[in-house]
Amino acid sequence: MDDRPYKVRRDFRVMTYDVDFAGIMSNQVYQRWLEDLRTDMLSQFADIGELMREGTVPVLAHMEIDFKRPARLMDTVRGEIWVEELMGPRWALRSEFRIGDKVIARAFQWGMFVDTADFRPMDAPPSIPKVSPQGKR
Image (cartoon, rainbow, N blue to C red; front, side):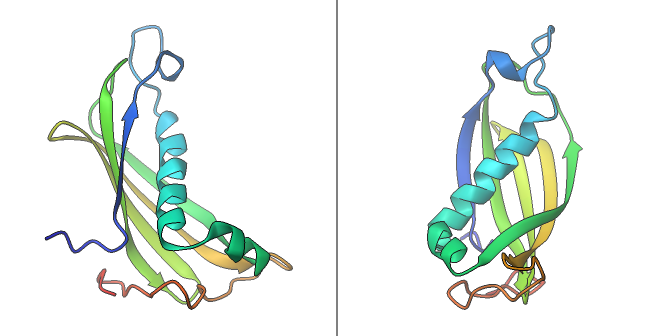
């Protein structure tokens, strides 16, 4: 059993607009895919519209991506994201991208929930269960 909290998977296809003249995917594509995965995850576990109406939004503060292997035109890439920590206003996420069983990239992101009125940090909404730094709910 996978015990990574809030884990979400998604398959992506490397398209012509994602690659350079040699058919290798640009590293910047991972930023878009990470945004897609974060949105999918939040949508699965919270009502984004309701959070916004309540004046709470998650804001990305930091992102690291380690590129291990290239992706090429028409590759199918499996992306996975999960919560590593969700305590108070802070959240931290880990992600992996694979082609088959080979990891091609890993990412770490952290951010916080903020009040939309003044953009000051605020605790995550009570509707979202906390996750300790060891990755346990």
